[in-house]
Amino acid sequence: MPNSVGQLINILVFVFTVALAYVILILFMTIPSENAVTDATARFVNECQTTGRIDTENLREYSMTVYTQGYQIEMTHDSLKSYPDEDGGYFDDYYGYTFDDIKEVMYAGANEEDYIMKNGDILTVRVIRSANKLTTIVNNLFHTDLKGSEVTRFSGTIGNSNEN
Image 1 (cartoon, rainbow, N blue to C red):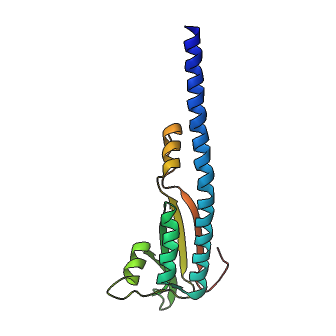
Image 2 (image 1 turned 135 degrees about the vertical axis):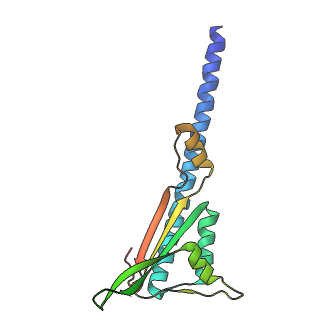
Image 3 (image 1 turned 30 degrees about the vertical axis):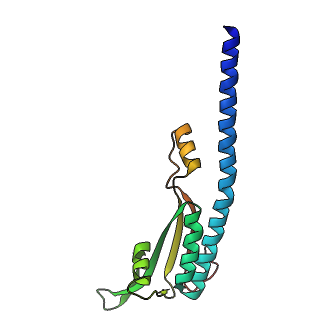
C-alpha cells in the first residue's frame, strides 16, 4: 500500500510539473507577440498622426499583424468641432467616432478611400487581448479573466508627432 501512494504522488508531481512547464512556455511565447503588436501600434498611430489620415493599405497591414497574433483592435477618432455659444462666439469640443464608423467611411461603396482627419483631432488605438490558450489556462487555474485586458494603448493628436 505505501508503494502505491508513493507512485500516486510521483505521478501527480510529474503531471503538475508538465502542466507548469507548458504554462511557462506559452507565457514566453506570448511576450514576443505582445511586443510586436505594441511596436506595430506605435508605428501605425505615429504615421496616422503625422499624415493626418488612416491609409487603407496601412490599416489592412496593421490589422493583419494584430489579428493574426490573436488580439482585437479598438480605435476612436475624436474630431475637434466648433459650436456656437450663447454669446455669439464659438467653443471647441470633440465628437467621437468609433472604429466601425471609421471603417464605414473607408470601405463604403465600391472604392476604398483613406480616412482623413484634421489638425487637433485625436486618434486613440487600443489593443485588447482575446481568449487564447494561455488565457484559458490561467483563467481555469486561478479563476481570473484575462480576456479583454488591454495589451497596449497609443493616442496622438493629429499634426503633432511623437505625442503618445
